[in-house]
Length: 126
Image (cartoon, rainbow, N blue to C red):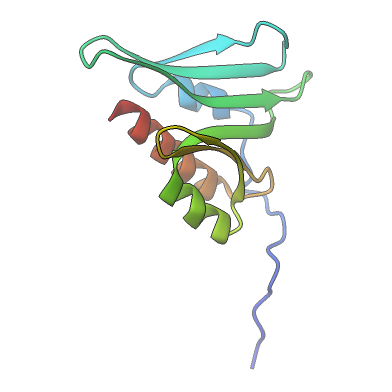
């Protein structure tokens, strides 16, 4: 009988160089640079019909490549709690009302990162 691994190993399906372009391609998402750092990109929802303007994602990337080194998303507290329990990242800062800033594990699988990013985007649009 085979034993399952307790620790996931880093695999080839990590977040790719085109991550920021993928996020920018979502409807009503606007990418802007951070004023104090050239390696940080911030993503806002700017939806005039819904009157929604909100920063929901912050990505720090390598200066020479576009490979993300840190991804922080504004998530609902319940989603962040479940993601932390699944070891997809760490609850970093509590935010009002009932949200947290969640730092996503840089070694997480691409599908897990995309799921959390889409959860943050869906919450920002609602």
